[in-house]
Image (tube, rainbow, N blue to C red; front, side, top):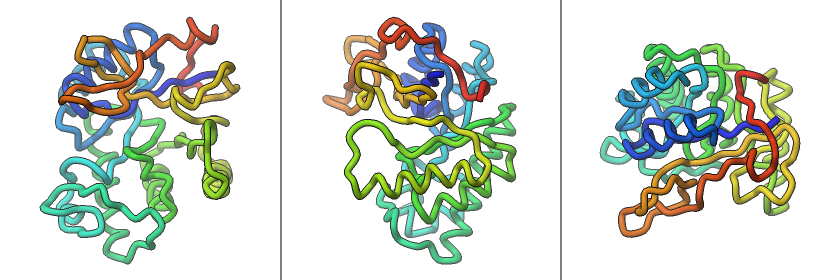
Length: 247
């Protein structure tokens, strides 16, 4: 089975359109939504109009944009001037107030998506913060409280330094031990070789380049997204897509 999940739904107008078009073209099978994204309301509308609301999960966010909660806006470990500052130390333990702020913020993000009418069945995060050692237990708690039973793995395909493999393997084993469902392999399009592993999730970031082509976004240049064409995995590998709902 192969799942292709589009991150960042709700981030921008172009991302929302690219994700919608990717669903229509059979290029992706799931997406995860940014509750604090600037185009969240538009994303909600598009998912309903194009009948993929049942394929929307949550993209937990502690690194970009404006938080939903005041406690997080005032938490220096994550924010500056009321905005996420992107400078998370993933190995630094959180103190009591920081843990409380993270819990309130991520709970609010889950609640906002549920209030918009989505049954959230799978979770991942912006910049993979759900895998950070002192944030992961809070994410697990929030997922249990909100009936979310599927969580993205730590990346385990492609080129990975040896010292990172241990941390990633420990995290991935903990998902199964804690009763969460997931796949066996996870990575991006650039991690994929000539043969797809079985039981795989591929992460993509659909957007449009300056020529209007739909791409897997990997950067920006002259205010335009850059990346590689978002190709059909079935055309390249002869595999049919499945979704998190089928796990």
